[in-house]
Image (tube, rainbow, N blue to C red; front, side, top):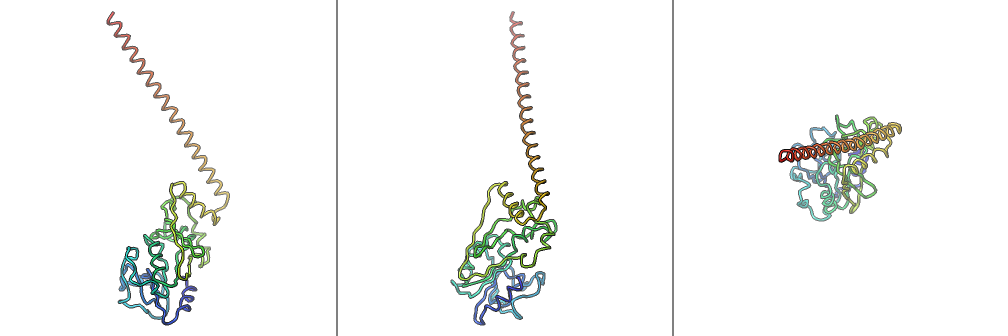
Length: 273
């Protein structure tokens, strides 16, 4: 979690506030009274792989208040409506198969909360992991605007061509706060999934996002566009030529068959004579 926002969360809580951390296994928020995650209490913290503990100097949750379950399984979380004073869900929604369900339950059980995810810029950047765009285990490209959270499937096409992703050098130049995005919400927030149909439309959306960041020189983008146009023209010309040659071959074969029939008929008439 972005450290500046850790302090902000702690300062906003009263001693009596009940707090829930959703998906916090890898780096549980210590001030949380409850944690809900698919992984067990005993292995919490992921061996420190995600950084030192956050959220205070001691754990408020216990083994008894650690709820181990699939957070996407369509059974309501074990809390009454608005029972939780504050909920955190940090670097979890981009991982799970049904973030919309998790968002709906978050809003149901909590009065207010905090969401954090990688920014779409970070998730669209090469260099985070070898030979990948973004993180290998992330399923979604997410964007937060105002109190709206939108999820777009992280299409495999993003790994296929440089123009669909941002270079590693671009990511390295970004300030820390642009690596992540967050939302402090009160009572509710809006969430949705964007679905794109068709390979060309998916490519257009991925390229649109990259180009709005302008990570590549314009001459390179123009050269690549002209190259692809030339390849497309070459393909169309080749296709037409192949069809034309195929048609010519079929006509020649038809003529051969006709001549064969004529010769056979002629031979038959000669024999009868």
